[in-house]
Image (cartoon, rainbow, N blue to C red; front, side, top):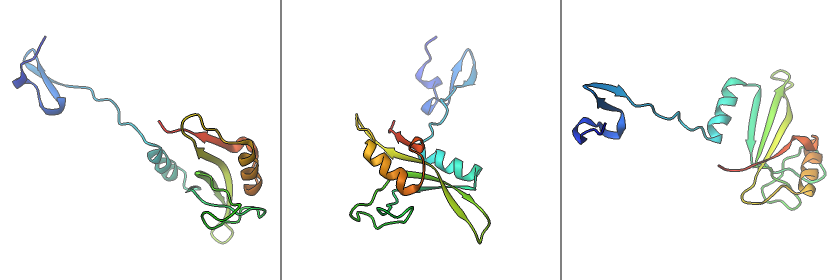
Length: 130
């Protein structure tokens, strides 16, 4: 049944069909990666996410200035915070590096990252934009 323009509402919130209004179903809102990070932080306060933090060569977990020679900089790191307020310990749980097109994380970069953060290679992942 084709509706007359006057029977339609702006943005398609509802349409008149056979004398009564019915609500159109809208697709669920699309979540972004940032929405997921915020949801994780709210649901699990013992976790923390850091973006684009540089680490020095040769010193386990020591933070470097951005662009410092020999440093590495993963795009996203997920930490679990353990202990109490005075003895809080940050444990790396996962590392993601954003890649576009056919780019891949190199074995050399993954090995350096794993060594500097004290994690197994299996905890390093590639993430691709939608």
